[in-house]
Length: 616
Ligand SMILES: [Zn+2]
Image 1 (cartoon, helix red, strand yellow):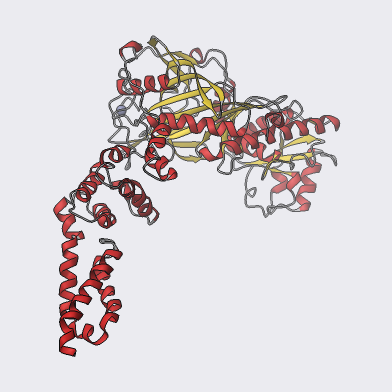
Image 2: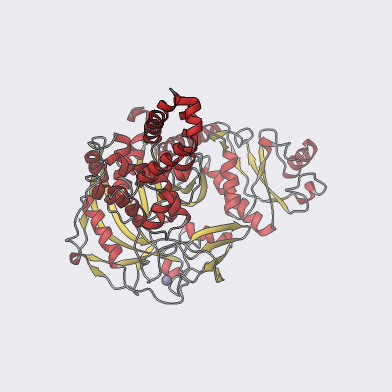
């Protein structure tokens, strides 16, 4: 679809990439994830107003949610992550990588790099803020012939990993807190969903080209800022699947268009929202609904909203889903609204009583929420505000990406006054690091490899952690065989649920050296890798014994045809089939079947010649 069809769409992307450094950004702890926490630390969100500057609506809402935060503490974390000790100076290895990436994005690198504190309100940081340092500004990349501006590049500390979200509490893990993170923000130059996806892919490729970024689920996250004409700026957090970005953008455009339609409908109907919370606990006293039974139930009345709360705004999501998101953010299970009732164990009779208790007329909608009274009331107050905004249009907010590319409400868009200086960490001069070299881009490398390998495989090898081994061995071993050892076989083994992750560069090098030196046949690579997964400390001799060499095949076949001379005499060349089964039973996956067949045929022919005269 061309740009005109996207309603003045403007998209900016923010990419967060974890770096694969030895240590964290502001302490000397490792950047690996941990298991078996030693203890749990309890905290409530604390915010000093002076630090917040003007009152921040996102922070205000978070405090109203009244959540308790628990943090898991490990052997591999220290007092810095727990906010019991000040941070160390900034990690130089991480800074170097950040400057390298900035150069690759043709950005202007700042002379002095200052660490700032950015208010974080969801408890994902023990300090209540995230340390972030602006490293470079104003670069650009080219995506499908279009220039996309890069606004900023920051070096930041990663937040805690969320382990559990319960009613009134959230559990976080400290192992991820403080891992160096590069945050790259494009300008809002992107005008179609497709270019949004391609831009994210390109930046990801550039980051991986450094060879110093973490890989795997959760190590790179994309936030997408979206607005359309007449809509509002919405920030969508945590798109983990690159392939979903275009869909996420498309669905957000759809959501904003539908919210604008709803606004027009509501205005035409003269809809409005009553500023009142009703206690309707009595109505559901004897209800069959498990969700409502024995709970405090509160309600709000939306005049002339009937039929609209149930309107779909994204595939599978209704306006009511937006209200339910808010309830969930306040620690409730969700809401019910009269557009979906009777249902869920709530009878027509109960709905009728509910409507009369709150004074609902035919065109009105009622929304109810159950839970601890104060929590339910706060959530419904916030839903009232959201319902009022339906008459204005699309609210500015932070949303979270769901797995199906739809989004859910997370919190209001934070205000801008959220940064202040981190006085515990001294600024750094960037010019000590400016000589860092620009690495070869993965896409350039892929073009080089495409002369040696099929194009798809060339791209995969160029993007592999072990491309260095390909460089090293592809002149002495057939390139396709190197590619098999470092990429194709591991991928196949992974599909079989083998724990390929225990294999490292040294393992692959050992197997490649053995093939190069003729210690094992190329067909033995899979068996060798399997053996190394089973026993990662195995040495070359042990592998050789396990796999056997070509001379082993010769000996085995010779011995076999000697033993089975009777069978060969009786069946002649037809003895090949049963004998082949025996040889393959011994050498399957170690030696090429074609070679075995050839050797066996020769051996049988020789044996037949030996015994022929006796037959005649
Ligand atoms: Zn630490």
